[in-house]
Image (cartoon, rainbow, N blue to C red; front, top):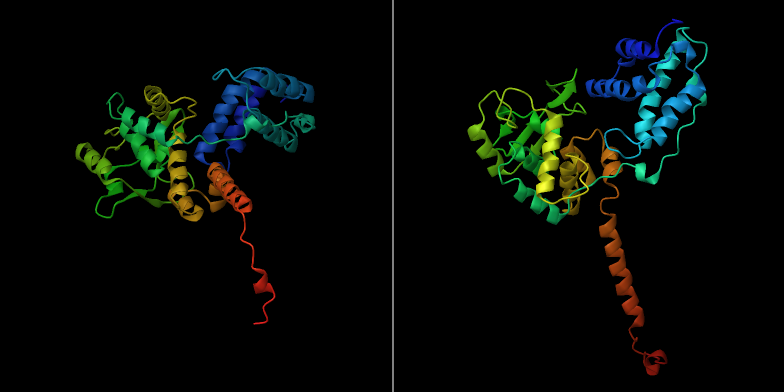
Length: 330
């Protein structure tokens, strides 16, 4: 083990140990993190030469100070922490099996999480949603139908792309959601369960699905009318192109449409427990964590209106009570 490169060690660990107990999507995400960050920053060092200073300067500090290669923006706290967590778990294992004597990650200092790093949702405004739907009517992308479906139902994009004609129940007006499309070994494949392993029913717009069913062969995906799975990365890029056509700025990603559905549901009076089931969240607490601040602007407006109303009452001249009433013996 003295001559083992860390690139080889971390890959071997992930394949034999690290992936145990992970969902397929988490495993694939960790592999991407290793490929994108861990190996480029630490892979050239031998396992026995990794020390606290090296991990601090070559991984954490570099990721903190250098812009993200993909976005050009500073790396968020979570982006830095993901490769650190993988390296830490790998080195803990190395100590446990005796390949090294101590874990150098124990004294590494992570940067403080900035407020801007906090995960924020970005639902479309009512006006943006109208423009987006109009932009989906021009026929420039084969996936415009998928975008409308997600906006109307709140499905995850993998779930929307996994739907087949048999999943649509027109007479009962619901969609049977029981699978998704995931990335596996750099390919997109069908998985016969949802992200949270919870099958559910989602209710839909009649015309949107009736028309699609006419053109979709029996054993094909509704998203692309094909037996081949949809490339989710391409789907995300096409979404941004539609947003550009609709003149929508500050676009985060396709998940914005799901957030828009959830936000509108809350504003329409749907309670969190019902919304949690519609979205397929693992628990109501997840729904609360994601959307607890969604209606804060509405609450603020209501509070201001109430304050204004109460202030107007205090300024109103109150009628004086007749003295005779106070001194009445009756």
